[in-house]
Image 1: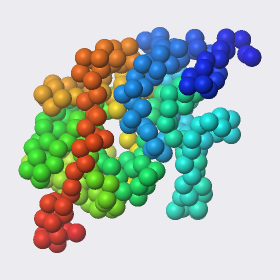
Image 2: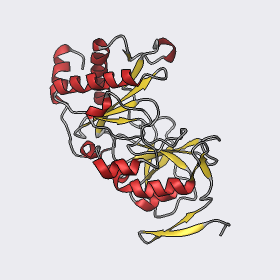
Image 3: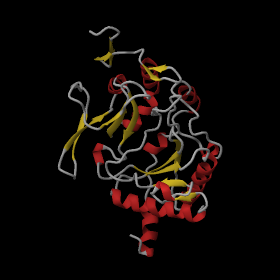
Image 4: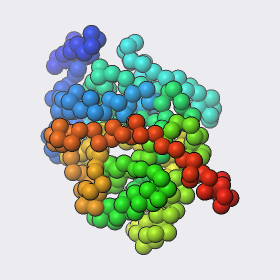
Amino acid sequence: MASGAKLVTINGRQVRLTNLEKVLWPGAGYTKAALLKYLISVYPYLGPHLFQRPLVVTRWPTGIGGKSFYQKNAPAHTPDWVETFSWKTSRGGRTINYILCNNLETLVWLGNQACLEYHPWLSSVHNINNPDFLVFDLDPSRAGSSAAVGEIALTLRDILAKLGLEGYPKTSGATGMHIYVPLEAVYPYGTVRETAAFIASLVVAALPQIATITRSVGEREGKVYIDYLQNVRGQTICSPYSPRPLPGAPVSMPLIWEEVAYFSPQSYNIETAIGRLKEVGDLFAPVLKNRQSLKPVLNYLARRGTL
């Protein structure tokens, strides 16, 4: 075994850990050992949000200052106890064997490969064509737009409420915010995406000075982009509690609505997040349980001739 490597046994399975002193976040000095400590501590909260969902990760073998790559396909060295999900793509018919992070040992194995971001699908393998939630990614076009992001998020919350829906906010861990709307897993992605587009347009109509759904970065005029195009089969969004490969090792952290108006996009990191979780618990647990119907919205859109 290579120098510095060690074997740990988790749920009866051996996971080989290597280069534990490798610094992954140079500015803050956080090592791979610190990442693994965080992943093990956060697993009771993070695990349910990854369970049975095809997973895309980003790997940073030499830390955030080096090169990175997305990993969709399970690599050849994947242990036989890691569960996977085979999916044939519509373009070219290529088969991708997605990793399913269904247990702690798989998460630790991924962490040992310097996987710093965890992006699950919006649908589970049990109902792959029907997402469990609709998502909005509030993406500011310039730094220092937290107040605008917060105002847009609160307006979005109010519009959702008028439509009979409840949303759940979290920091992206980068500069913006994600809003999840949990759904009954009965609607095709196309329907969910068109519904999201309609709701986003209502927000822009209410806040035209600061919000936009214009995709071109050059045409956003410094406004916050409401990205609803994530609602596509195969698209992913950063999981709650996932680390981010940014200075300071921030994590994507659920918020209560009262915090949204004054949120800081990188409030919590792999060192401070666990303390918050012990205090408030999993604020995103309802996302996996509060299955909501789109029927009132779809009926309205059908009367307008939109769908």
